[in-house]
Structure formats: structure tokens, C-alpha cells
Length: 421
Image (tube, rainbow, N blue to C red):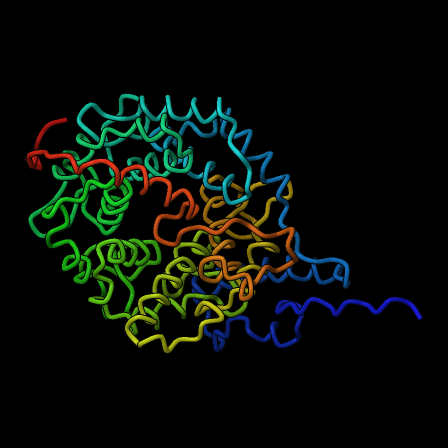
């Protein structure tokens, strides 16, 4: 007798029941239902292509080498097509560096030093980082720059950050109601609270008054749906909800949110047929929400376990981890490297970063708990874990905290919110 064959991989998208989970519009045509059907058709085509080639020896594959080639090339040279992202250059550094660390690809010392020097040129003399050299400081590229420097994690990288000026910059953006401007004269939304909390906590510059009133302002952004909008009264949105919840975790105030309502909202954002997440009710699936929604659920899990005296199941997150991995692996990989929003869309570094981040969350349960990890396709697809609050690898978070906690919090005077840069 020959060797016993291994049991086939149990994939959700191969079952007959899966087909019947497509949208039911009750015969009422709308623009929304039409677009949903188009997406489901493309996703079904991707699932069917895999099904036709499926055998016990063929598993979903994460094309690591192709993604690495795409990322390495992007970190050294970008085509003219990226000119529109001239104000987002620290973001490009962060998206690529984080994708590389998830794929366990080391950054050459010379390249890491080049990134540090470039980000130093993006830092404003008045604190914070702009979208490129000489640009005005803004909280979004400040978050991206600090994350990128923490990923590099060297003395040179940490020394780039002017902590005293960064604190002055954050204080200049703080509003009386606890919210933050994205930049001087700019808009207010939950992203700014998250970016401020993230860079302040990583670099150890939180003062007693820096986040006074911020948790209460974030609570006011949680609406009747259960999720969090950009500002009070806005529709709940996956990106804003993640930012709000993660900021509350950093400020140790997450218990003040209506956690059951938040759980009710986010668990209904995973699409039954596609397996990926949508960002809002009645919207299409998008690969980036693999992290914005998927990364939110570990934060909720930890908070609810504390609130409910450890009553939750300790073997999985509160979403279908395998279904999300199927969507990313079968529908979101460009054949030449890089990941994307949904079938038919172009690859980009943003979706590469957040698809891989969501895939990492879906693979790992807790901290190093291999017993309950779910790695679809086998160990060759395993990514490094990501920290669900900061979205950089946990060892890089620990390295930054260890470095900056050894330094005193800067003493600065609060700047006027209308101060000119």
C-alpha cells in the first residue's frame, strides 16, 4: 500500500453553501446592489480559478518573493506615477518598511540610514513631520515617520525625532474640547487623536494635560450604529473606528466606550461571500479594511475579556480568520507582486501594507500562541505578528518604548493653536 494521503484543505470558498451567501437584493435593483454584484462576480471568478486548479497538493500561496521584489524596488525608486503622493512620502516609507518587516525581510543598514536621513529632512524646525522636505508639519505624516523610524529601530533612527519640538507641535494642535487639529488651521477628526496618542506614547512625551478631554471627545464620536465616526454625528467608519478604539486603549480609557455596540457593528462588516471587510454599512469589500476592521477586533477582545472577567473564548478572534485569509490570498495578490483593494484594482503600497497587516492579524492569536494560530496554506505563508495598536511588529514597539522611557518627558510651554509655522 502507498503512503496515506493528507486530508484536503477545508476551504470555505470550495463549499457549495458558499455560493448561496451572495447578496440577495429581493429583485430590487439599486446602484449599490449592482456594484455589489459586480464585485461578487469578480471574487467568484477568483475563487473558481483556484477551485479548478485545486488539489490536495495545491494550497493558497502568499507570493512572498514577488511582494518583496515590488517592495524593495519601491523603497529605492518610484516612478513618475507616484508624483501625486509627494505630500505622503513618509507614508510610503512606513507602508514599505512595515510590509518588509511582516515578510521578515531585513533592511540593509545603508538603506535604513538613507531613510533616516530623508525623514530628518521631513521634520519641521517647529516639530512634527511634513509630507516631504520643506513641507508644513501634519499629524498624518508625523505618525508615519515615527512608525518608520521605530521599525528601523537604531540609535540613528530614534535620534532623528526631536521630542521637545514634537510635544510643542502636539500641544499647538490640541483643542479646548480635547480633539486635535490635523495641522495648524486644518480639520479635526478622530485620526488626529490617534496619531497624536501613538507618537506621544511611543516617544514618551505624554504630559498630564496633553490628552485632557480627549477620551470624552472620542466617546462623543461613537454613534447609534455602534461604530465611531470622524467627528460627532458622522457615519461610523472602519478607519475612524480603529483610530478611536486604539487611541482609547493607549489612553487606558477603552472601557468608557459602548463595547458591546462596537462589537455588534464591526462583526457585521465582514462580508459573507467575499470573506474580507467593508468599511461602512452597504459599502464594498476593500483589502485595506483587513487591518482597519480586523485589527480592531483584537483590541475589542482584550477589552471585553477584562470587562467580562475573562469569559470570552480564548481560541480565536471574534471574526472568521480563515475567510479573511482566503480573500487576501485568492483575491488581493497582484501576479507581479503587491496587494490590492479587490479583484480588478491596481496594486499599491498602501493596500500592500494593510492587506499584509490584516493577514498577520488573521494568522496570529494573542502573543506567540502557536497553538491557536491559523495560517492558511501552511507555514510558508506565515507572517510576523503586528501590534494591533501601532501596526508595527511587537518587538519594534518594545524597542522604542525601552529607548524613550529612559529619557525624561520634555518640559515645554503650551503653544497657541493659531501659532504660525
